Image: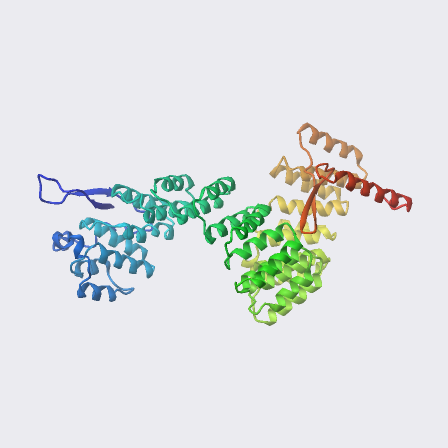
Length: 540
């Protein structure tokens, strides 16, 4: 298809020439989009001069307004175009906008094509309406074509148009093109910066996003929210908290969207004191304590091990949704309170809410932590019969882990054999973990072989198999495993733990010597070990 763009007048010719901007449409769009709605004879009936008005004639006539008001879901693009008198860029942009608001995206593009054919030159507001359609249709090629048209008409450097182009590339994951579009904008504003920053965060390019954030000439609360949320979602939880504190220091008032992001970051580092401080800030602030903030606090307190506070927030929440119940059920499960999780599930069902896949995962997790194997099997098999589409790989993996952990290895192996897809590495790790606990070396060897076939560099599998051999007294096999690890250069990843003291989080790894109070810490640790040895505690 061709989109036709106007060129300057030729001094030797009084007629307006038409420049051509080629659009290759995706299969989702009408093939005759730029056949422009009818037969050549019908198109010929439309007079070109009726579309080449001067800018001052942009006020709508009563006929134009009447035609726009009659635009319905059944309106035909070509008939509307042909029947609208004195159509100019303003009225055409208005009609396109109405198509967009009715979600008739293909018709809007069709109308835009006819505009170009009849030499109605789009302005920045026209492009502002049609460029986002590329995102709605998930068509990057179409977005590039709109970009080319805007570039040809010299409108791409206008911030309104450039930001729309930038948004298309960022949302359709073409981040390098987004950066180029950003650089083409003559005077990028806070929206331009925020859009590119969000694109970087979606690609996991946290350093680029932070650098751009620091370069912003001005920031609003949306910019801060994007950066805080991006850091939280990419695991940069301490950075997210620090940004929130810096935001407050600069005098900005957080919005309703700020708190769930920063509270989520706090929950990921299990900083209970900090979570309580942010909870207090929410209560004192002018923001409404809505279900999103409430759900974030329920999860935060649960992850910090304070189920009393989590339950208190839940009980005070006026409007609870499925996420609220899931947060509570998963919180009980995480803290080993399996019976409470099951009671909460029954309470949820009594309200008429239907469980989803997260609810089922929380139930299986609760049964796993509390050793409720029969209950877990009951829930799993019930969903398997009533709604098998709800079951995801993680549900099967959790069930395999539950059966393996409590010695029902034969059932776990049978479940692996009847999976509706090939079991991944997590399934075999769950089985290997059960084999290690219950000293089933033969089945453990099978699971280890499956894991190493999927990932030859998986260190944990070597360690777990070595431990299984050690528990069975097969020391020759232990030596063989350790020799293989040494030959392949594989090393155990040290475990990590942390503790919060006076709102400060202290992180430790195995044999850590980096803490500034290491001498005092090891002094107390050695004293404890000596005391335990004196009372003859095993392993000391």
